[in-house]
Structure formats: C-alpha cells, structure tokens
Length: 468
Image (tube, rainbow, N blue to C red; front, side):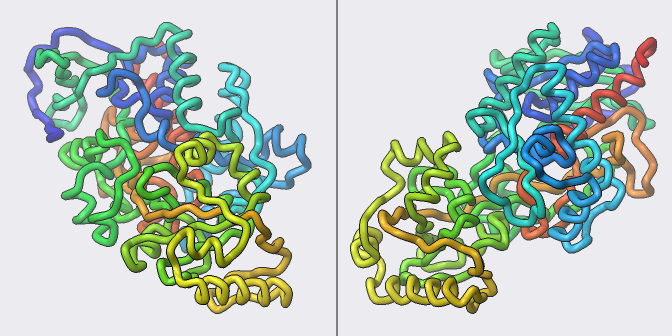
C-alpha cells in the first residue's frame, strides 16, 4: 500500500533532480520535457519493460489544428475541441484545464513528431463519438504498444535513465508537504532511499484496486478490468496523504466491446460506421453511437452480461487498420456468415428476433429516421453480407479521477493552492471527463497524458537550480 513518511531528517542515499514515477506515455513525455528544460530526470517503473495502460490502448491522441488535419482539409480548432470535451462531460469539467489541454494537444504531437520523429497520421476514415471533427492521431500500427515503445526509445536516445523492475513504496516528505525523496524496492527485496527536487506522479489511476473501484465506481465493481494491474491508486493515496485534493474519482473510461472470452478490444469504429449490438435475445438495447465508455455498464446490464457486435465486410475493412482487430480475427473471435438466419444460428440467438432487428434498422435507414433508442440512421449504409459478429462484454479500462492539478500539472490542495514540488499527469491526475462514464470523450486519457506530462516535466525542471 502506498505510504507517505513525514520525516525532515531521514538520510537519503542519493539524489535526483526530477523523479518520475511511471513509464507510460505521461511519464516518458514528462522525462523528455524535463530534459529539454535542462533538468536530469529519472524514470522509475515497476514493470520489467515500460508498457502500462498506454500499451493496452489504441495509442490515439486527439489534437486540434494540426498539420495532418490541414493536409486532409479537416476544419478544426482548439476552441472547437474544448467545446466537444465540455459538451460530452455535460459541463462538469474545469474550464481552464480543458482549454489548456485542447490548446496544447496539437503543440504536443507536433513536438513529438518534429523532435523525436514519431510518425503520426490522422485517422481520416471514420468518426469517433462526441468529436465534431476528425482529430484522432496515431502511429502506423494504431496501437498503444507502438506509442510507448517509440517514446521509450526517444527517452533512451537522450540518455535519460529508466529504472525498471523498481517499485516505489513510500514517499518521504517534510512537514510542509515538500517531497524530499522516495523509497524504492528492488526485485530482490532490497530498498533504496533517494532524494529529489521535484516529483512527477505518472503512475495512472486505481482501476486495478478492487476496493477503490467498488467505492467510487460501484456499477463496474465486478466488471472485467482491461487496464494494467499495477494501477492500484498509489498516486491518489500519496496525493491525499500529502494534502492534495482528489477530484472526479467516479470518472472513468469503460468500453462496451471487448471480445469474450478472448479479452481483445474491438474498435468502436464497428459501431460508428453502421454496426449494431444485440443481446442474447437478438434485440438491440441502446443507441450504439452515444459512446463506448458508457456502453460498458449498458452491456453488463444485459442477460449473461454479454452482447454481440454485428457489422459487415466494409466495416471490417475499416477496423483492420488496428492491430487489435487483426489479432481478434486471427484468434477466431470474429465470426462470419452470409445471411441473417445463419448468423442467428452461429451466435445462438432467436432467429426471428434477429431478423426483426435487421428489418427495423433497415426501415429507419430508408426513412432516414431515428430509432426507438434515438440513433439517427440517416446517411448510414446498409449492412450487407458477409456479416460479421463478435461476442463482447463490458470492461473498465482506466479511471479518470485523481489528484487535482492546475494547467502546469502542479498538485493542488482543496483551497486551490499548490503543493511545493508535487506534480501529476495522465491517469494519476484529474482528467477532463468529469465524474461520469458518459463524460469520457474518445482519447481523453492520452490527451491528458501527453499535454499534462509535457507541462509537468517543464514546470518540475523550474524547481531545479540552473534550469530555465
């Protein structure tokens, strides 16, 4: 359990300028930014190889006003992006933070592309729920694993040390809440105490802590957890012990389309391009385009806590740009057949009900009308054989609440003042999704990881004598 030891005199064995806990996107970006500002950062990672929640994601970063958008004629702006974030979260977000990450998103990925040769491109062939413009940027494989690997390579190229297989168990703080250092535990059980000028918490949220999930997100207490098991809430526990405010702890990203029992993410492009979800009775149960995060609890409320995502070959071709989807196909998670009645038999749902479901959406499509769930079928292409289906369940991906921060990623007390030298970014910090699952706009996790990670590294470096 994460612990804070208040001791102004305890001896420390070594010292670093900026200590960064966590080697996901937020921590690695913070390290690059701190080094550019003249500091000497140290990244500390519990796992043998940096992966974390970033590697489990699609690796897509939403950004507005980028050169990739301009090249494809996409009209977008930070203000429009900020409006989308606020609308999805029903206004239950901190306006200054939303404005900062919206403005900083394009600057951050342009910086990563120019300075570290990350080959971003725009996802231009389908829309994500809640985004009024196409602004999702990713690397060639469209995978978070590639993103974290390229960031790690950039960190290593700058000779920034990454201590792997090293678990931070305790923070050492002075009575004024200034972090003096950390206690590290090695795989052999040995411990080391190191000092630091500034500390950046980039160790994600608490999705792997069942007790905290049950307390803050009760509707997903028994859901499949699709995040990194190391996300035990250390940042929130440390931050709270040091006097930081915790905000939006009920906020989270779920996903209503994880292949079962394979445990492989099925991209929501399958729904946004015209696919549907039915339950074991062969009936639809929601507007699938409202958002994949809130769909997690909706799917889990269905009989057997399961659903079937159904789409066609055209949509499958769009989905194949993602490694996860190709992986699902190779593992037999994607079932294919030529007719609705054959599909019903294949997925073991009532044939009459499934046929009626298809007839209903076709009537709505032809009438360019909304269905009973409010989904607009105007301009949607018909589903045509061969039909594809994946048995799915809902899952918790990562939490969106955490340590309250300002636009420089400084940890804030409940009264709004800053703690002396504590920073938080990514899943460790309060995000921009508000307190509800429905507030999660696609890409919000990596959005705050890269923008607040960059801010944390830069500002933490300012606490180091001699840095700009």
